[in-house]
Amino acid sequence: MLRFKHLLPLASLFLVTLYMYFFLAVQNKPSNCGTLLISSPELKSSQIRGGSVNISHHILQRRAIRLTRESRYLVQSQLRQWREKTPPVGELAKQIDELLSVFSDLTDLLEVNVEGLARVEGAANAQRIALQRLSNVFNAELQKLQNPEDCNKVKHLVVDINKACGFGCQLHHAAHCFRLAIASGRVLHLINSTYSYSKSGFSSVFKPPTSCPLPETVAKAHTITWGSPGYEDAAYVYCPIVEQLHEIPKYAHPAVPTSIADTLAHLHGAPSIWVSGHLLAYLMRLRTGEISASVERLIRSIRGTPDSTPIVGVHIRRTDKIKTEAAFHKLEEYMYYADQYFDKLDAERLMRARTEEWYGDDTSPLPSHITRRIFIATDDAEVFAEARRLYSSVLSSNGSPRYEFIGDVQRAQSASLSTRYTHNSLLAVTADVFALSYTDYIVCTFSSQICRLAYELMQTHPTRLGDASMRAQSLDDTYYYGGQQPWSQVIIVDDIETGMEAGDTLAYLGNHWNGYAKVNLPKNKGEAIRPAYKFESRLMEIDFPGFNASFP
Image (cartoon, rainbow, N blue to C red; front, side, top):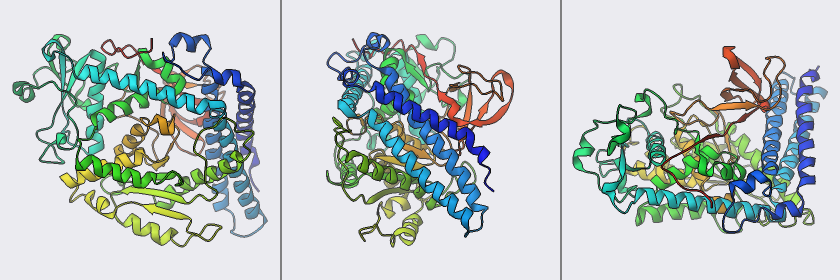
């Protein structure tokens, strides 16, 4: 017999989500949406606090989507467990299968309609425009800081990108130092004369981050490091790897510059990841020529024509990290979440046919038939054969192939351990990362630096994706940044069993994607597994004295 008492908490959660949906629907009037149409000058912090721009609407809308997804994780995980323990035939198995199907359809429709509230009446276009303007302001400030009029009158931060780790790890190391540089008003320099991936150096593929020359004596001598006595006054300071820092800088992830924090929190669901994405995008500006042209061709092939259906990016890491930093995951596990995304698109297509309810939604219309396009990036070339074996014979209702797999076996082979640290491998991983960032949704393992890198870069395409903070699903870890500060979560509802109250903060150790999360309880009460819906990320707003990007 099913233990339906376990469904009572999630039923309450689902009802709360439905209530939030109806509350948002009432609030989503044309007069409110009109205030989102940002004209120059851009959003002002005073406007946000004053309520003329409805920040509460966006916060509640994002929370409703998160609660919907946590409901899905919880219910489907429980039902699948019960289904595995039930004989394959019989009335009970049939009931569980039916409940799984109905609940999936219901959560798809709920999420589609909650997302729609942030898109109709011109709201989606307004948000994309505002995010693009914010990106422009942020990038302009990076350009100004990195290319001063007189290089001798500014201070500098030097980082050796050749950290003894993989490509994603090296980029995250450089971006960590870039944060420190912009916060302190220093020019960032990359030492890349010796680079593990290419004898030609990091700069053979990517543009140098600054026009300022780096004295050869400084490049060879790392006498003054960040955090050492007197480093604040030194003209040239070396940024060590995070493992060598005695104290995590207050500017490290997830810190967000105060000057943009309010605006960014209104427009985007993950402000700290947005900042990291823009720093990484600046460091990864491709040199013009064949390299950038080949990446652009790949992106065009992924995006397809304006009539092409959306595409899911799947990143599968299977070589050096398995059994050390990550578990092995079958292709079917990735495809489970890819199918969920496409199922939601099918629900959206049906809902958007009700055009009178979706007035003012300018996002691209979905075709009557959605081919499930999957871009695969992997270090295991066998994944492509696996995909063909498992899915090539699966047909859609109209008799056409249900799936279209896109990827390159040669790029996968170049990522093998024997050829990984070569120039060709550098080009291949660069292409894969950019391609993943240009998909509509990413399924991967956040234990992988490449996966997190692609997700971060995805946040820098606002005109196409808007707020892309919810466009990824990890099979293992929640998002984190190596060397980050303690990233507190805030409790949004009381947790009677542990004595936690709304407003308390705690350390979040990970989401199990089954409705529960592992946390460190406040006041040194140890670890616990608690319902994941009760916790939200907390904005860490820090003054960056050297960074002056803001809206007038």
